[in-house]
Image (cartoon, rainbow, N blue to C red):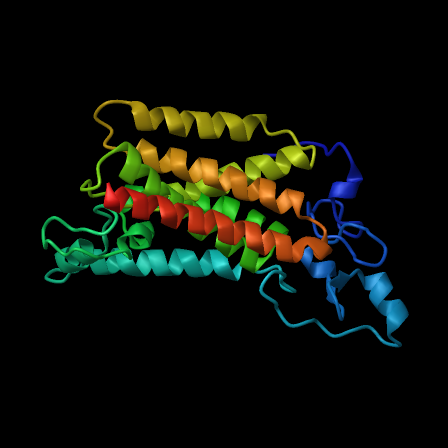
Length: 281
């Protein structure tokens, strides 16, 4: 997916094959999750941390935005939860009830029940799928991009990206299709991952041609008549995923953590505001 970087400054100084945008607060070198040592404020590289301590520090505790482990726990957890709900969908007797309760069907309404306020449907659609091929494709793409992004971004940033992109997919369907259109699938969130990965790789100086082709092909498939694909969710997730990627790259310095969180909250509130406007009009 990536080529030779334009500058080694975008890659961990101890692991040249690992792209990252987290900097040591003391020396300014790029460090991957494995090389980040929690300091009183921000993170330090191994060498800077060693200078401040007489012995090698123990592995730090996982924080909301950084991970001391290379195991993509969030990615695997999302996959497990999604598969769990797919199994529930497939069980005789309760499968239809689960689908009816969680599938997306507009902002705050479900035509079958006439319930006036069901906002969870904007997010619950992410764990629902229409068939074995549907969930297999989405989980395969999540497995590929999720592991890479979680290692580059950290667990908290990655989870925020996934949730915001998933919500954006539902909002796009609500505006561009129909507020009563039943839609299921994690495609919005998946396209959000690809959008963010594209932006981050471009900003790091990597070759993104193959990724651009992959995204383009999948977008085009959504517009083919008879495929029954919600292209609106793809577009919404892709746009917001790219936006979140720009936010991450623009607030790379640890001193900008507050600004980064504020911008992510603003994106989330903006999406919620759009759902409210749609519900009113």
